Image (spheres, rainbow, N blue to C red):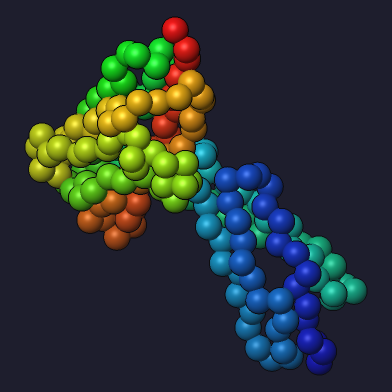
Length: 180
């Protein structure tokens, strides 16, 4: 057309994805829609996601973009990072992380996410990553470093890797600490 195209919304069909887009496209120019799909929310396998695009074009006010792909599982955990117990009990969880990709992938670090830091978990609960078999097997350990008050805590540990397609992996963590 000969007028500016306004993209007013790009709405995903599920909560596993987000879209960023050019809001204004001049006549004769190209606009872009950048879509990010969070693979761990949909699990391994093939997927198809729809995005409703709304514009100011009276002849095409809404159309759909369809994104298809495959989520490949990169790592498996021997145990979920969950614990429930009393304030005087030792808190320790170990999970063996196995890289299930065809090519090796090094897990290079483990740390609390920003939410965990804000909750003071760095001072209360330790996080350690040990290499068992470089590129294939690792041990993730969390343990109590200080006395804990009764509370329920939900946070995340961030694993970093040397894989450019999976620079970080979020590991959910939950603790329930009760009075005796």
